[in-house]
Image 1 (tube, rainbow, N blue to C red):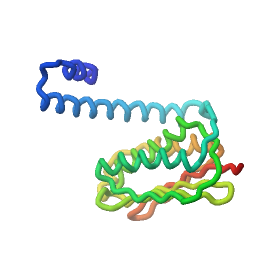
Image 2 (cartoon, rainbow, N blue to C red; image 1 turned 120 degrees about the vertical axis):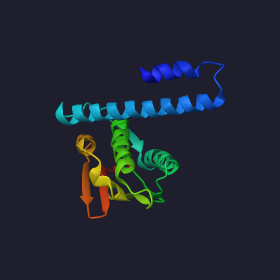
Image 3 (cartoon, helix red, strand yellow; image 1 turned 120 degrees about the horizontal axis):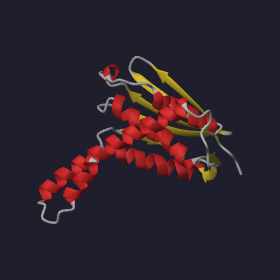
Length: 191
């Protein structure tokens, strides 16, 4: 409701530009909160609702798909003050059989966690490796000193695991004193 109200205000042609920017920032913040709430609701339903999520599996060129998803995410994270080192293999051959919406949800969850728990003073790393019949995307970040004070129900990570398992893959997470690492593992199909 607040978002719609501010959008009505922004559409006023007599609104000064500085007021318009302020209201657009408020709209952006409200839209992000709405996205966070729907993500949490989706995750809760997925983790505690249906046994297996419905899927629309499609075949994609692995290199092209990951490059698109990860480059977009890196740009967004970098613009938000999180330095990202991205390593994509020069020659990644093969295809993925995935539900594109679910795969995007996995990476949205992972990068949302990075925004909440990663130390922006240190670079985070995203590494892609294709070996034989497996594709692995590893995301590693330094843990923010105050991360333990941020409340978490871990639904996002459980959602990642459930979605990847449903697509024939797996999900692993590792935590040390100062780093957090996740691995997204999917079958890599060769022509």
